[in-house]
Length: 358
Image (cartoon, rainbow, N blue to C red; front, side, top):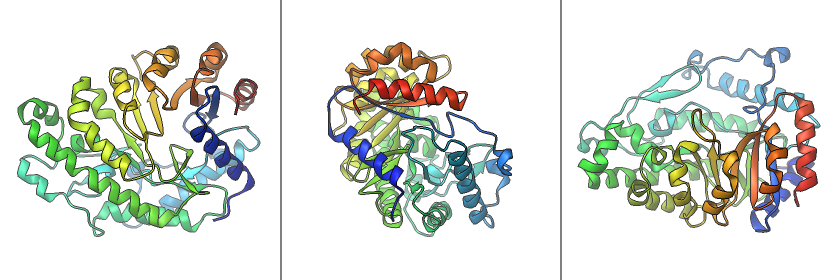
């Protein structure tokens, strides 16, 4: 795949960001989910997830996703931006465990979910990877359409994978939080069962998508090598010893199967952030903001210390950048920028470029 000149340059910039450990490198992405546009102006009626029939409308669903990205790129054309446009199947959270379990996926407006399928521990025997699994087929089918329609102006990324704790939580339900104390050995076994399917799915997708300018895309960043997306939300709800005891070794095995990993978790889990950062080979660590929680952008020095040498992704509003620009020079950071207007986006990007060494 020959990518356009802008994306080739952007991949080079990310490559420098990840291979050069010099502090003061600030990248900033303005994304469709941090800057909303009026898709109706492009003749696009956005449909809720539960309005789609995936038995018959898989291609239409994929075309709608591409049309939305095309519209957003058209509207923001010329905006200086480190967002790497990419498509991957967004089927809501339910598909993250149903691709290797017997769980039915319940579609909601903008996400999906499942009911737990492990009522008794013997039910773990139902968990298996299979190319005949319905949701695996949908993931691969939608991805295939995205690959087929590529013309060098966007990439196709892997799946936004649930981490082992999140996947175990989906399979067992919230009983898992009691199991940590009542059946710890079974929790170990369940999380270990969640490692191989994640690696399998990501490698199946890798065979389909190929590389992107010698690397891969996760969370709309370019990474050297194959770097999967993993979520760590389960451990955010637990004391740090739970992550260290149950999830860390499983996450490490996934990272070791690839060239690193991008890990996403929440401000609710600030207490476990430093433990995520200690995973070997971790490429980028995101801590997102949450309602009713302190904002990570307001505590950058402490979070940088937790991160050690691991680059940070953090979300903030454009208005925050001027306030914290000197602190941002202390490390390597990818900012997810909320903006209200294109003019505001242009202004904040000029400020970042003046102060970043990259």
